Length: 351
Image 1 (tube, rainbow, N blue to C red):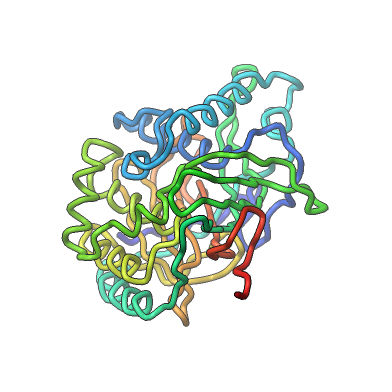
Image 2: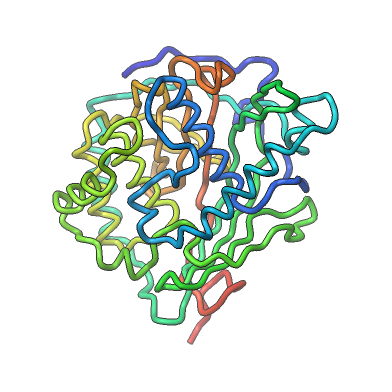
């Protein structure tokens, strides 16, 4: 699908202008994922697609987390969002520190180049070295996240852009222990920490048990996500993206995930995309006609290393018409990944 470029509106901020600084806000840990899910659910509802608003974005991942913990995080976010009523400015009242909606130019997508690109990426992934985790260790992931939220204050809805934040998580290899630091203030001081077994992502041990045959893996993904999302192909693509972002797949599994993605109908290539850290790369993307949203996995143009993911409203509007073409709904950048011996450790220690 080729889309005509859309220029950012004056009131918005293009992603190349840099993100708002991280500031203290009245939002609980996990809010970025919650708002992403809530906004995507609103998009689906606008188009009469059945998508429960409070479910985990991906049921394939939901099978391997402790649901009561996830439910508490979501419930906390709902209470905060519903209880905001101070002031008359919907942006400041809804999310202190939030600002104009993040926008981007909509680059054309090439339907012919995606399979070849994914084949190259899978070869690179297969040849990448990765540490072997042992029992008692943790997978550490650090990322930058930002996005767009629709807030309702005193009955008035507004779309706002959330400030760029740092998300740091530690998860035991068996998935039974975890810790999340979701944001920091302008001085780098930690504001939110949560002890959260599961952290809404599959464990290292679970990933190790997944098949590495692309056809078998893709069949499993389609089977376990059946009936969810705007359609089976969209949900399969989303599932693979979540596995790439919120876990540390082995080189063999990462390669299989890319080869499986190449078999999903509608996968395209976008020659230029920007992650949450401002890094330009080449993207493997998929546009969903039902929602008008394009999901992009961004890779370094030279090394083909995975950088992050973003979702962009490409056609139509969503969020009661507040989310227009060119809006970046969510953006993520992986900045560090390691296998470590304990919580708060951010790099592997020498033996």
